[in-house]
Image 1 (cartoon, rainbow, N blue to C red):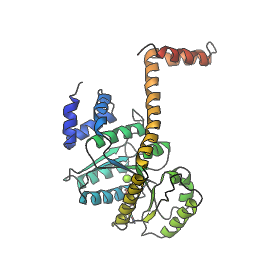
Image 2: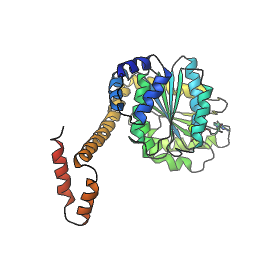
Image 3: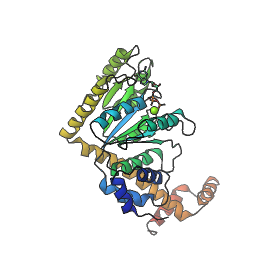
Image 4: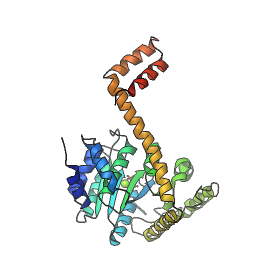
Length: 318
Ligand SMILES: Nc1nc2c(ncn2[C@@H]2O[C@H](COP(=O)(O)OP(=O)(O)OP(=O)(O)O)[C@@H](O)[C@H]2O)c(=O)[nH]1
Ligand SMILES: [Mg+2]
């Protein structure tokens, strides 16, 4: 299958939603030609601001993303939303929920929502999300919001993509702040305490402040804490303000480029690892790994020499 990628990109740039959907599917499913599409798309990326929103299941991420999207649409900024749902890929309510949300915005081509229910996704969840972000960026979206459940390494990797990360907490989750502090505290540029209509929002705020006092960020930014009630829109304007203040800070301190360099460092290593592994597999042929494994297990071969040999041959087969 071949595509005229330049024609695709032209249509993408013009905001054609069907082309966007097809391009994203191509990348997500690793349909032949996906890499060429990304190569062609890359030069026209770098425009979008990427906002990551992460928090426990049911924290109100989607509701908050919706509110933010509405706000930014009023400012005439185009929005792309990626809802990453690694936990419930086949039957999860989130997918259905996002379909319903999609209908909400159906009449507005300025909002594009995509669910990525991709456990076991072909290119790895974080990488696929990054590639889908690239396509959305190339389509000229001003703002891309990535919604992800804040749990594992995958999510941290996904969040690293974002220029700005909002961590969403909710009252009444007991030791939640404590339990998530390790990974998530470090990545938060802004905290939103959603469901502030519930009891305990002040306590969550105090807990965050206490944790913040223990660790100063290397960029000296102190993440602001914003209370929101996403379901009725309370505090959304404050969140928007906090986001744009951090944006100003990023620009003033010239941190966007630095952040991008760090992100690409990780991504390039990952891409190289994947590509080299593919090449090694290609060179060894089907079933070789199993055969080698059997030989090593039976002590007929030592694995160290074996790997050296395989890697040594890679240079000869460009
Ligand atoms: N009381 C209250 N309910 C809220 C608030 N924000 C969201 N909700 C409700 O909480 C439920 C979950 O909201 P979602 O936006 O789907 O949460 P989510 O974090 O996207 O959930 P997952 O994607 O499944 O992890 C919905 O029933 C919302 O209406 C809030 O501020 N206060
Ligand atoms: Mg959601």
